[in-house]
Image (tube, rainbow, N blue to C red; front, side, top):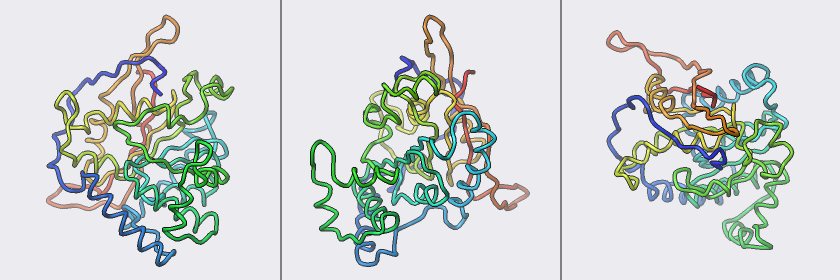
Amino acid sequence: MSAENSTTTTSGEKPAHLEPSKLGTKEYWDALYTREISNHASNPSDEGTVWFDDSDAENKIVQFLDEQEHDLFSGLFTRDDAAVLDLGCGNGSLLFALHDDGWEGRLTGVDYSEQSVELARMVLRTRVLGEGTTQEEEGEEQKEEGGETQEEEGESEVGIDFKVWDVLNGDFSTVQARPSSSTTTEEKGGDKNAGWDMVLDKGTFDAVSLSDSRDSRGRRICENYGARVMQLLRPSGFFLVTSCNWTEEELKMWFETDFAEVYEGTEKKKLGLRQVGRIEYPSFSFGGVKGQTISTLCFQKTAI
């Protein structure tokens, strides 16, 4: 999806890294979602963990997006046609909340854990499609047929789909928001790979920040996250990130210090992420310092 022929550069200092933990490993998440698959198969009302539920983050995110539909998002997209990508979707709860709230464009969740995607698809069947499922049925429906799975065909009927995809290493062409030949592409800003209107992250950057894996240059992999998000977004698209590990100021340091140099014809432009909104959570004071247990910031991909 880096159709802009861009080169991403980092300017400015990023926050100090977190100490690695098991929450930064794929093995941890695979084991967690394997348990939650079993729990859901036994009791369909058990849909798994909703991250940051104690802060009511999901409801606050949906409320924020509702409020911005006629403000920040005005003239760019509406709930009827928005292409929304949820990074590290887990059980899909955030996309289901948006669907329940009337967001009817394309809602796609991706996760590098196959078990996460399997759970999200199971919850989709029981919660949205109103069908019962067992683990055996789920496995059968994910068999290949004509190039795509039966499960994926069923998901597209309600505008929600889930894919196994690694935000740091996945092929962008497999998560295009719209076909590159779509007429919508020209209407939505010229990105020939039609990037996403909104990219959501509820705790995924936190997990990536806890990984001790390194890239080919020896850097912690969280260093690459902002650049990958920018490549996923359409021009003027929005990135909404929720974190319990980073303060608002630290999130700005992580995501406002990357920029991409792109060419539109012969003209070179610089695009970057800039904060345009935030979600307020209950605050606390300790030792004379005021803070929140979690932070949610909204960034927009714009010329800088």
